[in-house]
Length: 237
Image 1 (cartoon, rainbow, N blue to C red):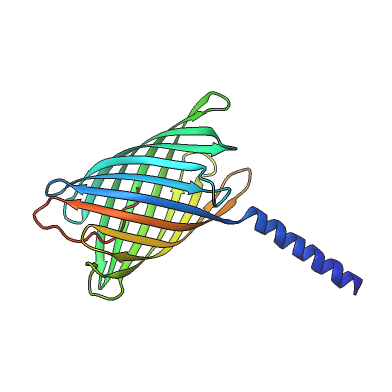
Image 2 (tube, rainbow, N blue to C red; image 1 turned 90 degrees about the vertical axis):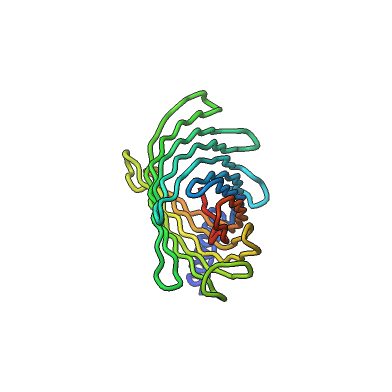
């Protein structure tokens, strides 16, 4: 009986310790897609994350860029500023430049998007004054399906799933895996919202880390083209 009690106590302690390390965080973003002429578009996005404490923002992103549509093909170049806080003080700032290519196609009612991205990253570590650089390569597959209509249009509920992998030249080569499951609603041809759960696993020589995000995104599309249609999903930068 005593051994059983000790075993249960040890198991409960292990679970409690795991729960302290892994908790629910939040990720919120607003994305604006401005299609100013046929084919050309500008994207801008603001994002906050509450990683260590759900109620306290400790990470932000402000980014944007310009792209061109050639049918199902979309080349894009972007720039962004990223900040990480620790104990209410900025601990790391990043300037990021990237080039990406997206290819989209449909299988029945399922829309598939393949996104490839190459990033050049410039870091400033505020607490030490050190400056470093890094490169990263990403691939994301997104599947979107309209639930209550044949295609995404005003009044449509849609589901979305994505899986993104991150690679880098140095060790470890496989840096991150990010999986998102979400449901969204198209309010009109200009505005939609998506909410869901995002799981992220970071890999490093010091040890791996799991993050669990409650995800909320609002997408705004301003289309000046001749055939304005509802945006299907938020194109997360």
